[in-house]
Image 1 (cartoon, rainbow, N blue to C red):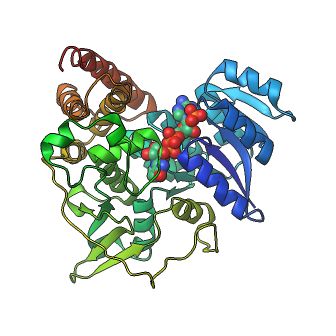
Image 2: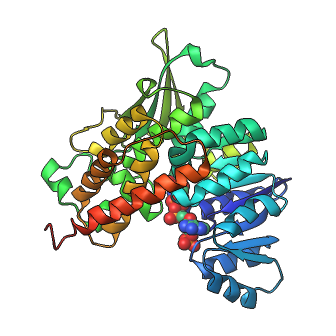
Image 3: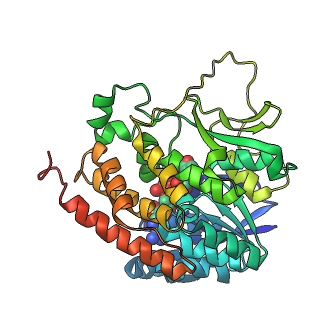
Length: 389
Ligand SMILES: NC(=O)c1ccc[n+]([C@@H]2O[C@H](COP(=O)([O-])OP(=O)(O)OC[C@H]3O[C@@H](n4cnc5c(N)ncnc54)[C@H](OP(=O)(O)O)[C@@H]3O)[C@@H](O)[C@H]2O)c1
């Protein structure tokens, strides 16, 4: 029986994870649940799965939960609560599904403790990829990707030495603006950007998919997960989201991974690895007529993807700087403070303004994250809709 600490249980990945757990009662059980602000959903999840440890972001919500629950788990809050869920609930597996750099410290601590860490939280690998790898090596745990493209690569690369592989390609749906004219993309509204054509996800990753920053973060994530340089990781636009990744070998042949675009598949893959069992998603229907298309990304229309390659090439803390600027810019866009096109401008400006350096500790990385966010907030304050219509 795998005992799971689910960090980010109330989000899109978190609720899909609980569907996978429900489908495998003899293999998976919940030891801890952690969430941010959605106390009503966390309460319902606790009553259903009865974890022994629960954490929520705010102390007031933790107190409220204690008063509502029909049983007596340990209830904690904040970053310490996230970390305790990972380390102190007797879990052997952590599913890291908090959104943003806030998920880094708990995922790193779980790797250091030798646990299986299933990472949906790509920002933790973008911000602290080198530290995560070091924690993995020193702790002796397992790092399994949950992002669909990286789960696909994990499957495709199994049994191949890095030298066998010429390149890997991850696919991108292209988001809602793939075939829009550049001018229209620049003026996109919040509602238009949140209207993703193929995936239903949380708001931050949905905006990242519209700017293609999501794919850029995934390129950086792939570099850290699989030890590949930027020159060996490419992106192909595939609007149907059925092929998730491809691996190209030196002889010119490719292997592709195909499955339905349902996150329960990569979640189950990571939780039950290496076992393959029937789960909540039906097998792919090859008898249904369908068309797949592939095209290269348009880097002029989606400059965030180019910025991610630039940050990966710069190395050190550059990906953390880019990630911090992007988190702040996306939050400002979702609040209506800046327009869609200003997201990429903010990311580019902060990446150029803050020099990247080597970071050897979590504190150093988190300090870079703080400084970059502050710089991004100041930049955004000067570029709000009022100041820059
Ligand atoms: N959704 C997808 O299909 C998908 C696919 C691949 C990768 N991912 C990655 O998976 C991660 C989660 O994505 P999502 O779509 O599930 O996002 P989401 O729906 O916005 O959920 C985010 C989760 O994180 C929690 N959270 C946020 N800040 C927190 C904090 N400070 N402390 C504790 N919990 C906190 C939220 O809690 P509350 O809701 O209670 O505030 C929620 O449970 C992201 O890194 C994303 O890039 C997602």
